[in-house]
Image (tube, rainbow, N blue to C red):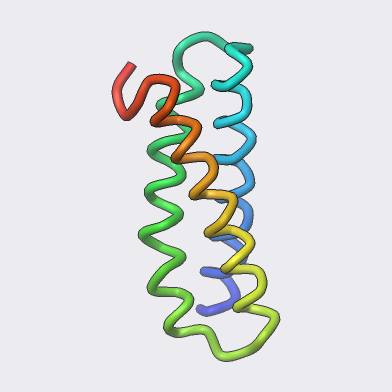
Length: 85
């Protein structure tokens, strides 16, 4: 369970970060900031409790990497449009 939560956190956080940078560049229209913001928020809500339940150092490293990427995605998404289109 902890491994799947840590993998979800890092993958979803990196996707949110990439979507946030696409919103920053205005590449794909107006929906990238919505995806970055919502996916980043969901990742933060999953990753923070996963950090409490993690058992090994490698899980914690993956979770923290995903949390930082999700935070960057949320910030860029909020800065360029917010939660709604």
